[in-house]
Image (cartoon, rainbow, N blue to C red):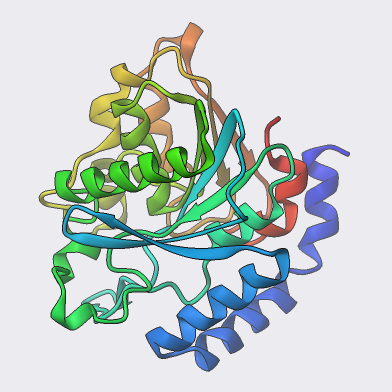
Length: 281
């Protein structure tokens, strides 16, 4: 079944899913409730939680029981609850709806694991090394990317993998691209509703620049020759094509990454529901 047929079947779910998402946001307001909600999603699949020490941070990983695999897909979470409104940063970036986790649980082509971002799902946030800038302006800073790189290496060693497939949702797509640019063991880079040129994105959205953050578009040359697929939603008002197209345009026409725009999809809907059909083999 093609992408358009998938969209026709899923479009009827948009209103219902929006209501459910709204209810979920109201029902899981505390960071601990959000953590328990994520664990409840993973547990029925037999997944377990690991806390990975990475630089000055602790990263939550959710994954099946470790077993040797030649290739491991690691799904990287988005920015989470970074802002309460356009001017008020959140006190805790733990996501209300961990879409990257739902994507990881829906993956069927290869063994998968989920990796949260620094300061997400971290109970003693106030007494740790996290600062508000770590999930706002400096969300893609060198220290954040270094910590994620360490977490990625720990997951790879845990599963004895030789290759990694990186899948990043939203801001996690930027993290995945920056990680892929630094590593030699990534066989495929996939992003979903990502921001791959945050300078172009903040300019188009009228947002403050992400001072202190690395920009994937500036590191495109390190990704030449790597298989890449970037999904964007046609109805995505948060990121959308404008957040990815300038990155893709950096490449010569013959080596340009694949960009797939999905009609009717928004920033959040309906990626997880369709992932078993979209996930590249």
